[in-house]
Amino acid sequence: VGPVWSIVVAGGLGQRFGAPKQFSSLGDRPVLHRAVQACRTVSTGVVLVVPDELIETDRRVVESSDADTVVLGGSTRARSVRCGLKVVPSEAEIIVVHDAARPLATPALFDKVLAAVTGGGAAGAVPGIRVHDTIKQVDTTTPGTRRVVATPDRRTLVAVQTPQAFRADVLRSAHHRLPADEATDDASLVEAMGETVVVVPGEVTNLKITTPDDLLTAERHLARGDD
Amino acid sequence: VGPVWSIVVAGGLGQRFGAPKQFSSLGDRPVLHRAVQACRTVSTGVVLVVPDELIETDRRVVESSDADTVVLGGSTRARSVRCGLKVVPSEAEIIVVHDAARPLATPALFDKVLAAVTGGGAAGAVPGIRVHDTIKQVDTTTPGTRRVVATPDRRTLVAVQTPQAFRADVLRSAHHRLPADEATDDASLVEAMGETVVVVPGEVTNLKITTPDDLLTAERHLARGDD
Image 1 (cartoon, chains in turn cyan, red):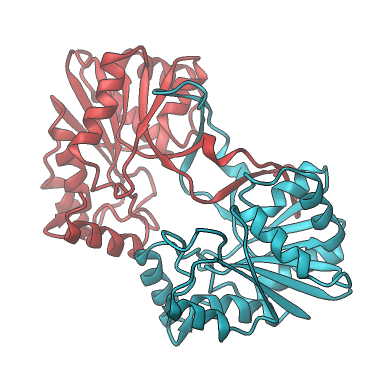
Image 2 (cartoon, rainbow over the protein chains, first blue to last red; image 1 turned 180 degrees about the vertical axis):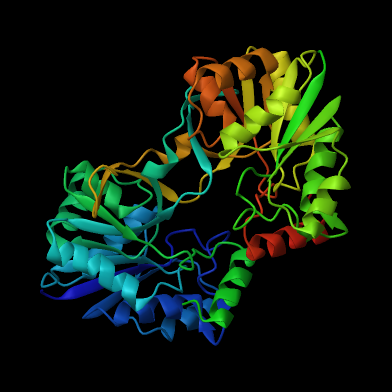
């Protein structure tokens, strides 16, 4: 397997406020530092993509991270990933994309997504966990009332997480070719090219920290040694 | 509008262990009591469906609830709802189905689902909230690796909750006609008959309590007066 590089996405233009809590502290260090360090363990290099409007304390969090390169993000998540892709060296054969707001992904989870891409025929691999809620698809074309159009079988659904691993060439092509502004994850761009993406078992403790409640939940996971 | 009856589902056969925390206390009273009381405010009568294996303290929770009728459930959620339907009087024109493990649904939410069924042309109405995770549909027919087959646009998805309100005749027909053993909600049975189900805005605080962490989150909602 050739070099692995990671892109940690911590936000983009004008996303400082109401954003995930990647600059908050969890235990003895910032959420973002934990995400970068987790990528470090499997990567030749780590690129960190950050928002443009940082208050002083958050700027210090960025500066003291273990990332090799720090770049400003774009106006959407997909654009921010592209900003990161531009500075990933061409030698990279595998690229891992990870949310800065997911501090508790384990080394084992990184190993699983990497193994699925390096071992099998998949162009991409993402962690997925069981969906507990019943999910319905609604007609959003008619304003006002939202009519249910489908209730997919819950056993066929997964809620996806990061880290997501991709063959570098495929991820670059996907971002190059497709209008990615609305994509909520990179895998969907790779799928849209007809490439195979597989789901590996995710981790319930690998939550994305977006609210103060999430931070409390993550603290309980840490205290229990769940990570 | 004719009489409204509610069915509160607290479990069925052999579901005592590993089940949702409907018998736990939240603030000054059990989760289950809160669910029954919320139904009371909009109903002529409330039927409570309970598991068969109850420890003594849980039996006391059932006995001290405000339900009019208590019945034993079946081996799946859908069968348990049918056990409840059998004892709902035929005079009922609207039937509300509610999870015993959702203690924080507000009276306003009950009003919304009822209004959608009594006012408009819908046969059923369910609360739905935004889905934050990216959801993917996987091929579950091939054992081992799970290939992604679709990533539905997240903006068209909702995570549904209870209370769910239905025209009584339609709900009875749906349960009578369809093999419902796998249904994770009643609305999907009604949809399968070709009837219209609409989604009304749900409440983030209306969580289903399945883990100790959920109970802590609900306690914070209560303390903040979020319900």
